[in-house]
Image (cartoon, rainbow, N blue to C red; front, top):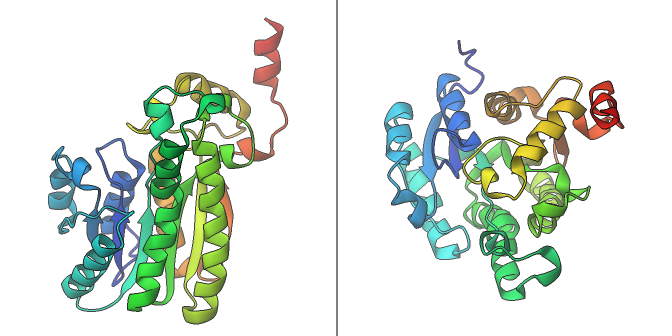
Length: 270
């Protein structure tokens, strides 16, 4: 059941790959709450064809864009504003890719050319998205931008590899650009630090099942699901959170502030 939290609002959702994607679930929730949408993903992801099913469900056009390419992003924003007949109210950045992880390179053996590509796609792409919106004056006042991150930006998870560095940079861009965008247009920019979630992209991390089971035992409320995260994104896009900006918001069932739980103690004592 929707509450019309996003009635009349217009947004761009980046990164909906398939039904497991948080971006996919968020698009469905935003539509349920009354939003009009544009969906975007990289050309290689679009060729998989899954996003067309989502586009039909939320009655949204699909506009491909390489988020590392400023010309692609300019085209995306211009076509989105043309479609909406005006400016944009919210953006979800759900984008991340590690070349070193894909190629099986350990963090201590990093290929730096691949690392530069990882940082560009997973972190600096947010800067490029915000810069494009800034240059085109594409976001309405009190607009909201959310990027998805993970607690590996603050803590060591050995097999999360270079993505930990990328998420740290992503969160820094959020704070720095969030300051300037807040001053200029009252636009708020935040990250949501989500529990480990069984998405197609996340499952590519070595030992991911261990991440999930450990986090479940370490979280008083248990792991936050993709559906839970989608609901939180809706709140962040709505006017109910209009004074929240430049924040890294932990959405993890309490994991981030728990030292140890009885369940973990019992597991260790076995």
